[in-house]
Image (cartoon, rainbow, N blue to C red; front, side, top):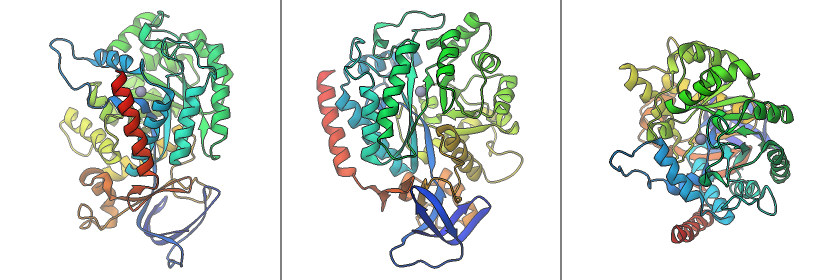
Length: 452
Ligand code: ZN
């Protein structure tokens, strides 16, 4: 049982709330109750966010690409370094890095993660004896940390728009549709060993890494479950897709594929207003990764038009250059303010920006990861986070402004407890397996850096 002095319920803030969790889900919510012996007592309870887009291995190269070379800095040179880095990663290192990343997410207040997983094979491109070896490693990292995993094996067949052959740096990623389908089957077996809330979706990497025919085939083979795709991150990508397929990426996808609530369009950054409204109406989630999008110089999302049209959104940490829930949400809002020379942008008409961002991302993250509605309600997964509203960053705020304080004024250290589908992974601000997992990460980084 969890007893919260304050809790954000779907109909508003409630006091003295006692929550019963059984089999990973919320089975009872009692208001105006008293704490009972044995209850975990917390200050302020919120639905925990899902981190809907992550390439966990990239955490290990954080800080290594912030050096300007004359005339060379761009997204595409960042990608070149990422390819050199991936040439050396071992399965053991991939697992250790993922476990550390998942721990950091849980300590920051994320209960679940969408691992957009595209390293599948050995360096050079030969498959492992077990085709889905590296999916199993991600599943093991989820088991170690207790995070709610939505594993998204990536279909990556071509090196660029127009079915260009893979580059050597992409050899570990490549599969045709039939081998990909076998890989997904193996990933499903690995994830079946995890708690029931964990699941497998699919992720065609991007329109440039697949073809219209392959996309239709793979969607036909996996009709249900989450479907994620990188859609319009960089202007070059929009130009390449437009000249190849005769339409901009979001425009093409909406016209040619049945995009529904099962879909999450990652980095829907470069959209016309028409694309923005059409995407909002499709019911798909916009998978925004504001820290990474700022770090890579991608550009800001078309927030006002999208929200006005009722679009769903969530956040992800993508490259994991920094894992911080509070900073992810505030970067999203600040990117809008800097572009529009305005304040309080990511809310329709009137209201708390912190609440609109936090609760919107909770709903959209849960939708994108197949984890329900992202609310504290009976029948929903017990993806819960507790924060300390007596922290100096929040102590002066009345309850109805606590989410504004969390998003704009606090650091992630206000998180005291985190449950992933009822698994109590963070207590007193610390992951219960922190020491082992950090030691494993340090040792993996020692061997990796020696090999680079
Ligand atoms: Zn990504």
